[in-house]
Amino acid sequence: MTDTVTAVRTAEPAGAVTTPVVDVVVPVYNEEVDLGPCVRRLHAFLALNFPFTARITIADNASTDTTLTVARELAAQLNGVRVVHLDRKGRGRALREVWQQSDAQVVAYMDVDLSTDLNALLPLVAPLVSGHSDLAIGTRLASSSRVVRGPKREIISRCYNLILRTSLQAKFSDAQCGFKAMRSQVAKLVLPLVEDGEWFFDTELLVLAERIGLRIHEVPVDWIDDPDSRVDIVDTARKDLRGIWRVGRALTSGRLPINELREAIGREPLVEGVPLGMVGQLVRFGIVGVGSTLAYLLLYLVLQPMLGAQPANFLALLITAVGNTAANRAFTFGVRGSSQAVSHHFQGLLIFGFGLFLTSGSLFALHHWAPGSAVHLELIVLVIANLLATLARFVGLRWVFRQAHARDLPTELNESKGMIR
Image 1 (cartoon, rainbow, N blue to C red):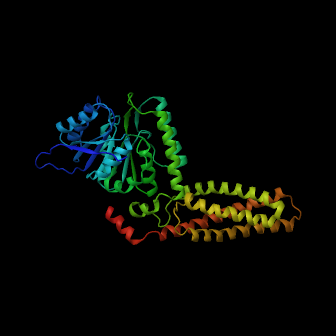
Image 2 (cartoon, rainbow, N blue to C red; image 1 turned 90 degrees about the horizontal axis):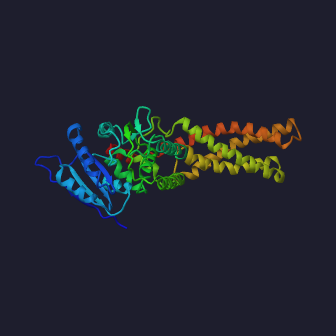
Image 3 (cartoon, rainbow, N blue to C red; image 1 turned 45 degrees about the horizontal axis):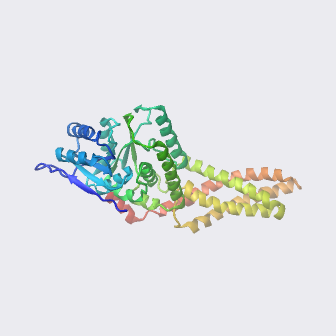
């Protein structure tokens, strides 16, 4: 179903600036009571306390009460207020539609209840106007934030962000605070990749932005919970978990063109060819390594009675080496898609050969010095040898994928980065 979008713009006085620096979007659904007072308060704040030209866009999400009528009355009475109406519900859907069509330099949004103190708006958008940052978010979880809300919402919010950090390696602190802004040029490139049209929209946008390498600016906010919130917590949580699974799978499979966007609009690493931090790489490499080691030991125990120690070691190491290279390629070093995959696996097999030399050599030495050793002693020796092989594998794979990232910086994409910046 195609959304129907209509816009009502107020007449601007002669000589007025019709293209604002900031477009503040207020998405609403059945807010006939609160819409008027909140928009008037926001309008007064922008007129008296905001140094940039600004427009307020009321994005009506298929309201069934008189919200649209109230919005149109506000647009007729207040300069710099317009209305966009969509025939389908969804905060994310409304933001994507308005942000993509906006002519402003910076697009922002805030919840209609104005739970966030408006004094945080300038710190939110200033780094975007200056070009220092690409996306800015309000955070209720910073130590300097002041938040008034019940314990249930506090626990849910912190648990949700913990899930994001563990499952998607998210580094931003607060995904769902209804107070965000983005540079319009960047938004127009990233938003087409954001599939969700409801509450998970914010999270998906932030995860993609972070993976692309955009600079995310966080602003601690003063925030007071709206006791009349219409959010269905259980339904939203269920959809958020489904969204996390979908985005995680898309990132792992390489379906999202993260590398291409990173090259076009992301920031290059401080050290050329090293896109991810050493500590993060070690943690992810360790997780893959634990899984690979367990798979290797299980295969060895299955194959050793049938083939003997050396053939069982060879096959178990070969099988797990292929899987290990694929997992580290995507998960540890952030290389997506099929480009150079064959070359990466070939180089991974060369590194495997060194690991085979270490483990086979240790088995040979064990059988030479202690003939007839029990299988548990073989396993102990192999674990030690594998630890050394793993260290060598990390250094080797880091070099392989460092070269891959260094080759993936074509001049025409570097030129497009300069144009966007």
